[in-house]
Structure formats: structure tokens, C-alpha cells
Image (tube, rainbow, N blue to C red; front, side):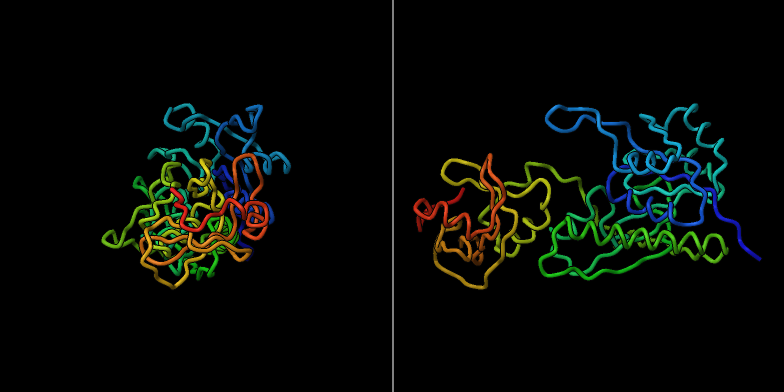
Length: 316
């Protein structure tokens, strides 16, 4: 007997969520509504701009809802009246009250880009790289009223690549999460989904990234700074100062060598990179950007500024 498709509400906002919505559109499930955050000002003209999820939903003529909050009873009734089997949440950005969590017949499930209970919270992708983790993945979770605390329905593991940035990891986990979502929906249709409670003792929290964190502290080790630079690519982008200007560092590599030289000191400069002493080891700057200019490889930066790259100069 053919198992009927599910009536689905999708809630998400950024590009990460749009990948999952695209997979859902290609599936046999019926999308009865797409929830996304209200349009926000963006660009130099601060023009109201729809989210990636809204753009995709409009392209496929799906009904779009953009409430400022789901805490009021009117919005909760609208959602309940959709008579959905399940609500899928991926980086939506709004709190789901108990009434919303309980409205769909099968509740709400979330696509979370980490191996829960590690890195619950707002910025799991960046914190994974910042911490130097070698493995991560995605977790499909049954939502409850806690912060990413609900039972886990499916986990898929991913091993980080040597030069992984938050952008490349985002792209990998977005597709992995979309694939895992479709697998879980199949299990839900069949009534075969198995849940596993999280061990709260193993939980870590991925706090929201603050712009102030992007400033390089050269007293840290080279490997810590490499992790930070890759974690903050493409936002907010790690930076230091050089010649009185902010120098953004898009990519760098820790070198296994030691010198008895104060941290922040330039010890070498060539087309291979700008080598700077840290609290432990040397950091080679590979891709940098000055204000008003484009990001460029170290070779181009060296050729343009080699006369100003003074050995012994301190980057602060």
C-alpha cells in the first residue's frame, strides 16, 4: 500500500534553510506553508530584501508567512489551522512557543548543523572550526521547549577538511542536512523513526559570533589563530592592523617553527605569504584584504606592498 505524503510546514530563513526547502520541493510531500522572517534592509541602499527561503518559496508559488513573532494566539491559530502533519525548522530565527510545537500532528523537527549535544545554540558551524574539532555533522531533532535539547531522530557525521572554512562547512552540512531530512520524513511516513535522548552532560554551547571577536590576539598560538581565521570566513573576517589600517585575514596557515621573537612580529615576507610570530609558532598569512580593496592572495599583496613589509614590524 502506498503511504500518503505528509502535509508539511517549513520554517527557515537563510541559505542553509533554502537547501532543505529545495529538497522538500523535489520530494512528494505537500508543502502547505513556508514561514520565514520578515524582509530586512540590506545592501548600500538598505532596500527591504526577502530571505533566501522566501525567494525560493515565491519562485515555486508556495504560500509564505512572515510574522514578527509566533507568541500571539492569532498567529498560533493560523498555523494550527493549516492542519500540518509536521513542521520542519531550519535556522528560522524565531522562538517556537509550546502551542506551535504541539500544533502539527507529529510535532516539529529541526535540522541542526552539529552532532548534538555538542554545539547547541546559535553558531555551531563557526564554533566547530574555532574549537579545532575534526568531526561534526548534522542532527535531525524532535523539538522541545529547550535550546536544541530535544531527542535525536537521525545523525550524519562529517570529517572536516584541512582548510575547512565556515563557508565550505556550511555548504557541506546544508546538503547533508537536506538529505537527512528527506530520510527522516520517509521514516515518519512509515512509522519507523527511532528517537534517542541527548546526554546533557556532554552538551556544549555555540554562542553567537560577535564582531569584536574578529580582532587577532597575537599572544594566542598559531594553530588557535588559524582555526579562528577559518571559522570567521566569510563573516565577520578576522583582522589585525598594518600601516595604521585594518588588514582582514581571509586565510592563514600555522607553521611548526619557533623563534625567540615577540608575538605580532613579521619575521618573513615573500610571495609565499607574510609570516608573523605568535604566542606559540608562526602564522603565515595567505589571503588578505585592505580597506576599500579586494581580497587577494599573499603573492599579489607582497608584489604591491613589499617595500612596506618591514621585517621586525609588529602587527597589532
